[in-house]
Length: 248
Length: 308
Ligand SMILES: Cc1cc2nc3c(=O)[nH]c(=O)nc-3n(C[C@H](O)[C@H](O)[C@H](O)COP(=O)(O)OP(=O)(O)OC[C@H]3O[C@@H](n4cnc5c(N)ncnc54)[C@H](O)[C@@H]3O)c2cc1C
Ligand SMILES: Nc1ncnc2c1ncn2[C@@H]1O[C@H](COP(=O)(O)O)[C@@H](O)[C@H]1O
Image 1 (cartoon, protein in one colour):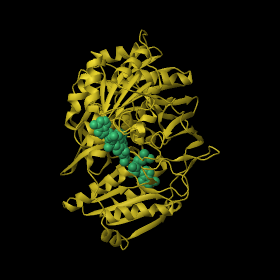
Image 2: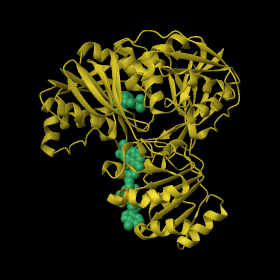
Image 3: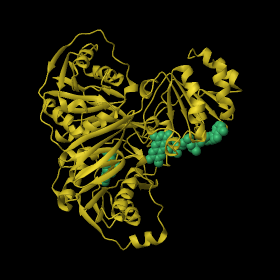
């Protein structure tokens, strides 16, 4: 069984992005980019399936500018077998990403497709569900445990107020939550080896799908800052302040 | 044209977040229809019909909706949705699973987690863990949107809308519900609690022992950082933050929490924030209305005692 993993190259989670002075967009020039943390979890899960003999091949795919290669290299260094870059300079939104991923699914015929539950730049959390809809398969969102049983996958999902478990017919789409696993640390030799693994580049425009953005960004802005607060000297003063604020 | 809201319930009651979505829908000044899915759920449909601002309840009652699966609910919404201008819901785990699927099947974009709506098609939503707000405009004929519940007041009750049964398409059989494990608690729901008491990883094994009595005093919900959850000190469903639950209570206690931006994303819209941390330079203090620099293992019991 092939496992396809979608990875997005995003502003590193440690970085607080800045708004451009003209408010037109977020300024990411020169900012450190990394693999989306949820996608790193997705790669880790796929590689573990291969190590357990459940998966035969792990393919990582990304859609974006040429520099998204870095996240593919990261996936290869973690243990993915090959990588596909669907290259475009265009702004990408989940529906367009899902349509492009669908064409990769049709070509590669994976038995399982793993995405992150959300990209930490756009915070949308849509692509996996959209892809599942377009290829007409079941979806296991916010997965914290997966278990392949015959021609089904059981997915334990982190939902409001607890967890639930669904069984999906394979092929299926799974989106990862934080507790699915802890991604491995990449050792230097693996990084070197990853350089030898194949990365195929396909021009997004050659795939014959409409991936034009549907949402138009009118402006970006900093959120309203909070009013500065105060430090209280001790518990008694804290209680006093809360009493005055009428929240006790 | 009208607005279709996907309602959510716990089997007994319509969730507060659905009432908040009804308020959000007011931006369009169009009739609001509420879709209630369930099995033997007549009472829920009646409760939904009582929400002020709802013109009509569409009641999809079928055995398969005892535990609604995203694939089946999406199929139903797609069948109904082409008659609507807007398909809306609160940004909950349930809707986050269903609505992107609906949007893709209708071949339209989706707007997630809107905090403000300028009808007919302009939305403000947080990106980059709430560090930036973006304003987006959608050009699609059907708008598919989830809203951040805490940004909208809950619609009141007292109305009496018409309830109409809808035909439910057969399940596509792509997935099967197996079981669920919901935390039973007499505490209020985290996302709509008036007071939230949250702790970080430094509480360690004493997380419950220290925070429960304080939470009890306020009838508060418990919250936690990712670090506390990952370490197994708190259950996953109480993680507050960018990738957990978003809260905006009247009073938020951040106890032994450093204030990483992923955590701030989930609580910085709280009305009053209290932080207790022994590091005077902890970033959380920049967001706290009242900051107490102290060892939490002393300060929390002292606070609980002072309040009782
Ligand atoms: C993709 C991604 C998503 C994430 N999503 C979330 C999310 O949704 N929610 C979330 O919370 N985090 C999230 N995180 C993690 C986040 O970056 C932080 O690591 C986390 O919030 C830190 O938790 P903490 O404050 O408990 O721990 P730490 O950062 O370790 O802070 C502990 C604090 O406790 C204080 N302390 C220690 N001992 C005492 C004492 N005795 N008395 C008083 N104070 C004490 C210390 O001074 C320190 O400030 C995410 C991270 C990533 C990469
Ligand atoms: N440009 C992209 N290339 C590859 N995968 C993507 C891309 N955008 C989103 N994804 C996948 O979809 C998930 C959810 O993204 P989003 O819907 O944007 O929050 C991510 O975690 C990735 O797995």
